[in-house]
Each structure stands twice: as structure tokens, then as C-alpha cells.
Image 1 (cartoon, rainbow, N blue to C red):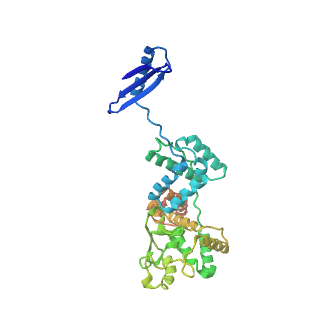
Image 2 (image 1 turned 180 degrees about the vertical axis):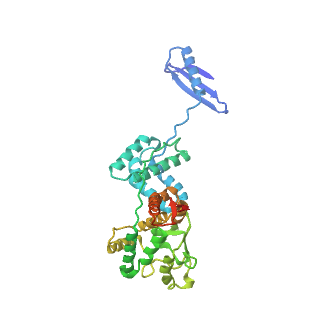
Image 3 (image 1 turned 90 degrees about the vertical axis):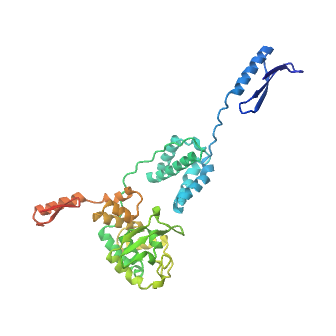
Length: 378
């Protein structure tokens, strides 16, 4: 219904439109019509009525800033990830993302802004891998915001292509020199741990939490299910429990130490296998200093404990172990990580050298090998 009348005192035309909506509600609008005649005021009322009947445009979604969404993201992330992963994400947010995008609405963070950030990260001499870690966290936040209904879509962010990383490991000569040094450094108290690391590939956190209840010397295997990280016991990286066979030399090194532990104390909560003189846990920082001093004593380059792990994986690859076996023993989640060790192999060189030896009569009746596979005898 449209009503048109002149204002009693001021004389202008006033339009009053009352509508009953399909849902039963009533809407009313009063407007001053800046026109001269009643007919023009009625026409204005008709236009006003039509405007009221038009569907209302959807309200524009207000996106949170990255800083506002941070806590919600971390709460969701913590349900699915280990504390160590949460610590890493918080560091990236604190150092890189919040200072840059903390006050920016998330729907305003586009590919151009991310590419500019990537260029600045490289300009600060950070590696492409580090830059990719930052972009990955940002991408995860954007995707989570879409799932939570804060954004309509998330931009697809590109990562840098990373050149294949070489695996740093000890040569056989360096390994023997390190073991000789470990036997004499501080009375040999680090020898069993260094020897075990080189022959099982455990990460330092796994070594620090290893207990006698995890080791079966009689059947020669160790179960790796926990690690010590940031002052707490956690599941292993990737949350995978793995069993590793022990070489006879490893058993021989551990047996004398095992005899010093009371049988009733053997459990997953019993004494640590590798510990300080007072039985306390070995701390990563001090252990890192110790292995570097052993390297100096051995006359080799300084390494970290993780190089012992790489050395174990490389030895497996060099002996021809299948990729899946190496992956399981190392506890890798991604087979691409395992493939780095296989690139160290020189199967063609071994095959060619072997063929040359047979051709020259050095090994009559020897088995000819091609890429580590038996194919026949000469």
C-alpha cells in the first residue's frame, strides 16, 4: 500500500509505503519526495515499493586478520599434530607471518603478497627449504580458514623447487676413527651410544629415551616407539613404532652393560640404556659437544648425531638393501626421503668393474652381477 500526502507545515510531498512480505512480516518506509506534484510523488512511491520487493544483497563476509585467526588455527592443528610440530609452527608464525600479515585481513593475502614475501626471505639469505616451510604454514592457515567458513576460497601458493639434497655421512675410514676415539674419550662412556647410533640409525631423541625394556639382546632386536623432545616423552617422528634387528657387534657391546642392570628393573619405564654417570638423561646440547670433541680426537670433521643416522642409512643402501626395507628401518614417512640414500649407490660402477675382472680372468667362474642382481655365471 502506498500513501502520498503533503507535509502539514513544510509543504513537501511525503510517501509512506507499507508492504506485507511473503513470510507474513510487515515492512514500512517513509520518505520525503523531492517532487512538485502528487503524480510524481506517487511514481516515487512505486519505485520505492519495487526497491523494497527486491531481494537483499548478501552481506559481505568479513574475513579475520591472520593475527585474529592464529589461535583458532593452532587449536585445530594441535589436535592432529605432535607438540614438536606445534612448536615449529608457532616459531614460523612468531618470526615471519604475524609481523608481516598479522593485521591484514586473510582475504587480502594474495599470490602477489606471498611471492613478495618469498623474495624477501631469500634476500635475507634463508634457504628455499626454509621459505617453503613458511609458505606451507600460511597455506595451511588459509585452507583451514576456508573450512571454518571465514573465507570463500584460498589461493594456491607455489613452493620453490628444491635441488636434491646430498646425504652427509661418514666414510668407513671416518667411522672407524670415530669409534676408536669414542673408546678413549672420557673413559669410553660414550662408546656404546656412538656404536649403537651408527648401527641402528636412531635419532638422538630416540637414543635418549631408549630403555632396556625396548631391547631384546637374545633375539637381537630393538623396538623404537618413543623419543625425548623438549623435556617430554613423545611418540617417534611420524608416530610409527619400528623394530630394528641388531648386528652381533651391537649385542656384544651392550651385553656387559646389560649385566649391570637388575633383571627386575627391565621395563619400558626402567633404566635408560644411554645415560650420564649418575643415571640421568643425556641432554642433546651436551651430547652434541661430546661428539664434536670425539671428532676432534679422531682427526675428522665435526659432525652432529644425525650424521650417524645418515651413515646407517647409507650403509644399508650400499649393501643393496631394498628401498622399502630402508624406509621401514629408518622410520621415514615419505619414500622420497629414503630415495636420497639410494642415489649414493654406484650399481653400474660395480657391475662394470666386475665384468672387467671376469673378462681379464681375475675371477674364473665368478657370478656376473648387474645392478646388484644375479644374472648368471661365467
